[in-house]
Image (cartoon, rainbow, N blue to C red):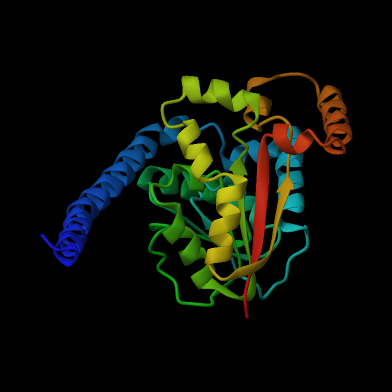
Length: 279
């Protein structure tokens, strides 16, 4: 048999393998998405954070610090628009409304959206916050719509991160800011979290790691890509603890001291990665 026949045979084998694998991969991704949607629909009532938690000074201060570091500002513009992808119960969407009165939150879970709407109605917020049931891989918005596109603790739950990043870039205006806050899988507290929570795993954290997201941001037509460390202890710590506010302030001070140490970038609870859509 000639070499050309062998080469064409190999080529045919590769094509056949791709044809068989592609439908299976698509099916696998869809199954994973449905499973995650079902999980959050069923557990929405037990989700640890709601808009009401922002009344607690420690929690509010912690979240505001996250927003300030991640977005680089706590001042907004009346004319700008913000999109919060994977908004959950909308507690951070509500916080983003402090920057601007035009904020839209989307989530794939009906139950999360329902809780978010109920919470915002109860808080009687004056800001214009709209919650929409939608998929982060197929955003129902036109190109170049939002000044800031944001997500928090969302990408590591996504079956396929790349199309979500592309969608975030698509709906951002030229030179618009895209921001993602994700857990740092090197933090030892997350090793424990992976053992006790079924929806968390190191595999999920790795696909939304600082390095991977930086690469995806670059591939999605972004520049000025930066990564920042946020907090040392997860905000869940604030929900589980009941120590006085004075001790909380001391821990905040201690965290600022640790922030100056090189090891903080490895041990921080979360990181924020930011990029600008190229003009």
